[in-house]
Amino acid sequence: MAPRVINVPKTDPTAYNPNRPAGKLLQAQTLHLRDALIHYAHEVTTLLAVDVRTLKTEGDVSAYIHKATALLHTHAARPTQKQGQK
Image (tube, rainbow, N blue to C red; front, side, top):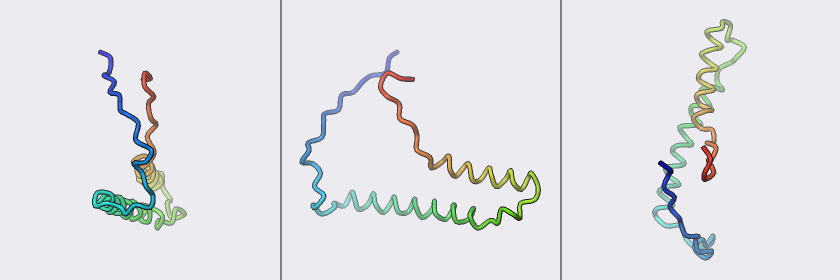
């Protein structure tokens, strides 16, 4: 079965006003984004605090690489699929 296509109308060019005060929804979304960034920064800081020269065994290096790549893959941009491609 082919996916159902939903046509979304173009946004009115006047809908965005960079000088208009931000509404409550935008402010709330900004706070959520900041919280996510703080969590991400903590994870990155923890990994960067490890002196990789102290990793002596393959198991040590493997554990570090596992944590680092899991963190990077979690936050990597997802490629977008164009309509009609699989």
